[in-house]
Image 1 (cartoon, rainbow, N blue to C red):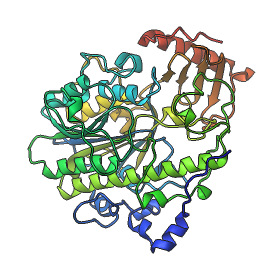
Image 2: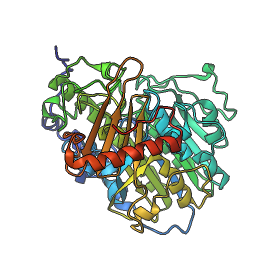
Image 3: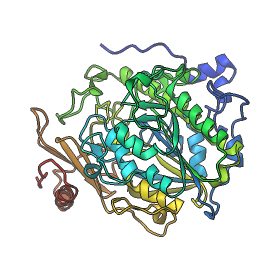
Image 4: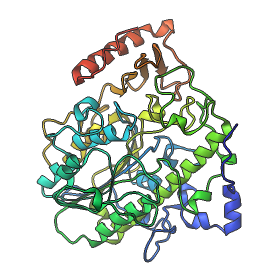
Amino acid sequence: MEHIAPRRVSRRGLLQATGGVAAAAGLGAAAAGPAHAAAGDAGGVSRPGEWAADWRGGGSRAERPNIVFLIADDHRHDVLGAAGHPVVRTPNLDALAKRGTRLTAHHCGGGMTGAICAPSRAMVMTGRELFQATPGEIIYPGLPLLPEQLHGHGYRTFVTGKWHNGTASHHRAFGAGEGARLFFGGMSDQYAAPLRPFDPSGEYPASSIYYEDGHTTDLYADAVVDFIKGYEDDAPFFAYAAFQSPHDPRMAPAPFSDLYSEEDVPLPENFLPVHPFDNGQLSNRDENLTQRPRGKGTVRAHLADYYAMVSHLDHGVGRILDALRKTGRARNTIVVYTSDHGLGLGSHGLLGKQNLYEHALRTPLIISGPGIPAGRTVDALTQHRDLFPTLAGLAGAQVPGTVTGSDLLPVIERRAERAHEYVHGAYMHWQRSVSDGRHKLIRYRPAQGTGSERTQLFDLAEDPHELRDLADSAGHRDVTARLSEELVRWQAAVGDPAEPFTAP
């Protein structure tokens, strides 16, 4: 039996019924500009497009720039207007991309836990490969962390939102700064997150937990806006906002909740009712959100709710950008937008992120601000570990010797063609992957009583949705062998705890 979602009006019907409320909220075509009119925006409301019209990207880096780092939870790389998505409305992120550089082949590294958010954020904070940053969720003690390094370079730090890497690393990263509305954990009800106030001691006792009215996206965006508007120090700042959206439970407020109708949402090009073989993780928490086989109506309902969450998050991003403009800080602030990882949502018969397809490994990455070329797209392979050296470089801070990521400025400025020859991925003991940007190999093996011995090879240039497996193609044996050798080399180099995935 298919899941029957609550009835929604179509986008066209919504606009007719409300006289254009959605458009007034900045939710129309990307060209309509950013959104500033939905709930959660205290005080005066800017007209759509106002922050974007005043934004001046591409300036000099004579001063140390402020940095605003925005990270989403579960945002797929392709669910973005600027990426050509046919349905989702993200006017603020699209405008940010137009005023900065969008890196289209940005990857997380997977993880040794079902909560891929934790290792992904550990890679961001440490600038290191997956197995060198965390054994699962907790960041290895003693590793220099990005906010910690910036603080040592004279930056003031601020943090709000989700942290799933332990309180000890949080205190090392932000303990010398300030913060508000902190959530330690993986997921929660979007309207009832167990929040904690910033604790300079780093103790964060359970007795400090409190609840606040409002959606987490609005609460975290409000915290950043309040920080920016109240900031009076001459030192530059690093403000980090870790959103829980568009992770489930997908509970976007109106008018976003009514923006997308499942009847109008197309299925992914690689939609399948079930995954074609046992990948070792077909019965985890994410995959059990619906019955299998997946019905088309069920997947469309999930997509409609997901797109609503993305558009609501986009609105929160717009309010933060508007605060930078209104305080005169837009011209000297680097803004980074990314996500910890992607999501299945019906692609390949999967709902979650516990796999190594492109829809799980790739995330949006937009960098905008002084010295960053405007309106540019970069297709070079990049990973979360690259953000530490890139931002440290922009800030003029020293990059610690523990960092293994690459500074992305050379590829952004087109002084280099690539940041990495290969990017790799891992999921638990079942799956490993390697990609050179054109061809991608995924290896599978049984473990813990589940899984299959399997090899997949995809030509991402000809088959971006990973529909045609070339692993048995005689014409691709050399490619399979080369990538298999690279995978085993990488496993040894980074200390992968799994046995080598030797050539098939």
